[in-house]
Each structure stands twice: as structure tokens, then as C-alpha cells.
Length: 337
Ligand code: LMR
Image 1 (cartoon, rainbow, N blue to C red):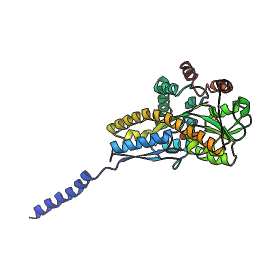
Image 2: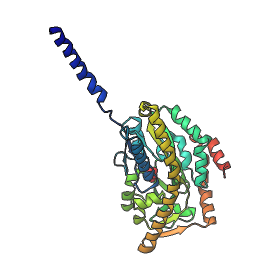
Image 3: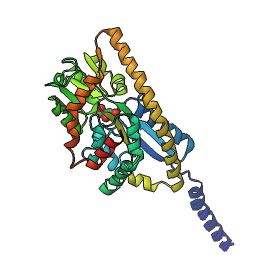
Image 4: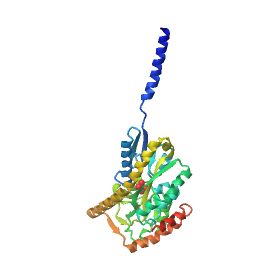
């Protein structure tokens, strides 16, 4: 009897230990995706779409939470936070990698990419592979997942219309943290002040800077055009993103989950390319509409001759960064034209 009692106790104890472990629900992997722009922008759209699809497809296994508009981290901070494992995903613009993968400043070169298709050829081709290898080699703990577009940038300011190179003289522009952009402004006789994206509106409104350069979607969604007198549709430089993931986090994901996430990212990237073009058109039109209705903003479109003059003034920058951006890449892009 005594023996039976002991055996029963052991069985009950084992059940108590084993059953909860077997039935306990595993917590889903959490992906915190931090970015600085509004949701109604190419990056905002792509991040939300990625989150929606992962959360549906991998329900209970992975949970993506997007933090837009620098709610969590601003600009370069996001790269450091991701590297340290405080967030799992981000998509900073090429300019923000100046301190970590400076070769990405290739994408900041003024008038280097004639069309968005040229950018796609670059990121989908051997240069894209070189960049991926560069991330691995740098040992930053950052995995490069894909590239997303925004669009081409436009100039705006409060000093004078920006039509010819001489118009830029002495004008103080907010720029992203890229040294290439600093040199671009310097080459025009202007001043480039590196400021985080979240501070641009106030800096323009309070006159800390006179002008800025950004895409129509970033300008429109953050209302920069409402605190500017002149805007020039110059399409002088590209703005796009490196979508990155914390490497350690990625390595902890089971292979089937990695496969599903990669597949979703490939699909979202393809659709985001079209969405970016659509949003650029839509938000450029909204800015033009604001200018016409309010009378507080004057818009300029450059003639081919005016564009050529600006190109001539800005292109010397291409040769100034040979120690940072491989000359081979710049030459290859030029050959693509
Ligand atoms: C900027 O700082 O102007 C951009 O990099 C913002 C963004 O992420 O598009």
C-alpha cells in the first residue's frame, strides 16, 4: 500500500512537471520596426504592409510592431539601437549609414541616377551584392535584407527661387547626415546643416535653416512646404533605404520562419517600388495644389538647360569620395545610362 502511494506520488509529480511544459504556448518572436517618416509615405506603406503580411501569415509565431515618425528612435540612432538589439528592424536612408557603411553614400550622389530603374539595376545587380557583402564584412551585427525606394529629391527655401547654381549661394539647407550631401551643398556655395528628420519642420519654421531637400512625400506629409516660399522640382538626387535586421535576432529564427519572412519581404519590395512612384506623383500634385490655392508657395520646374547647368555644378562631387565610395561603382552606374 505504502509502495503504491509512493508510485502514485511520483506519477503525479511527473505529470505536474511535464504537462505544463508541453502545453505552454511559446511566445511569438517580436520584431520592433522603427522608422522616422509618416505612414503615408513609401517607407511607411512598405513597413506597414510587411507587418500586416507577416502578422497574418505567421500568426502566433511572429509579431511585427511598427513605430513610425521617430516615435522610438530618430535617424542614426536607429542603426545603433538595432545593432545593440534594442529594436529588430529599421530602414534608414542611405545617408544615415555615413558612420557605419559609408559606401552607401553612392546613393546620395547628385544627378548620378537618371531614373529609378537605374537604381533598381544597381541594387538588384553586382553592386547590390557587393553592398550585402560589405555589411557582413563590417561585423556590425546588422543584416541587410533589401532596398526600398522613396523617390528623387526636390529643393525648397525661403531666400530666393532656386533655379541656377548662383541662386544657392549662402543659402542654409538642412541636409541628412551624409558627407556627400554636405559636399554637394558646399559645391553650390550653400551651407549644409546636418539635422535629424524629426527636427526639420521646426528648423524651417524658426529660420534655423532657410531650406531643405527631400522627396515630395516627405515634404508633404511633414508639411515642410507650408513653411517655405519657393520650391524647385529639380529631381537632383535619389532617396532610398537599406532595410536592415539585427543579425543575432535573425539567427535565432527557425529556418522556416526566415524563409517566410524573406518571401514576404521580396513581395512587399516589388509592390513598394510601384507604390513609391504612385505616392510621389500623388503628393507632388498635392503640393502643387497647395501652392496654387494658398498663394504662399511658388513652384518652379526646370527647363532642360537649367537642369544641365545644375548638373554641371553638382557633378564634381562624384570624384571627391573615391576613398569612401568605390570609383568602380560610380563608373558602373554612369555606364548604365
Ligand atoms: C531624411 O532624413 O530626410 C530622410 O532620411 C527621412 C526618411 O527616412 O525618408
